[in-house]
Length: 189
Image (cartoon, rainbow, N blue to C red; front, side, top):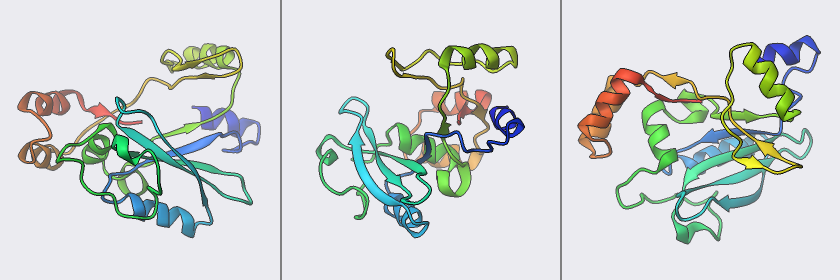
């Protein structure tokens, strides 16, 4: 819906802040290599905190200014150092938020597609306008006078049975969780 609105003004995707791709730890350095082949340069990386269990490498294209956040599960000890160019090891056999999303849907760069695209808007106006078109917004997760950030309500995607079976066998899902994903799908983008 938003792409159509921007196309009507001839903007295409010119109104964007950053593109977010999620990656498993196994394929993270490959995702970064693909982005670098596209001419992007690694900027800073951040860790969302020990409780969150994930972080991102921020990349930017020096000519176009396009910014990518490459999300990945991270341990607290990985808050410092180069996370982008060396293979990341498994985190004690568990999947965090990002790893589970990738296990359910596939790598963002290959199968699942972009997790989200952040654009710049007058927040209250956009929330009202999208609501009139049937698109709901979540409560802002950043709520300052100078910056409000919020997601649209996530789409639910069907999870292939083969992915659920693999996650069950690996002990990453309980039978109850798998049943819920079968019935309701899982949050996608």
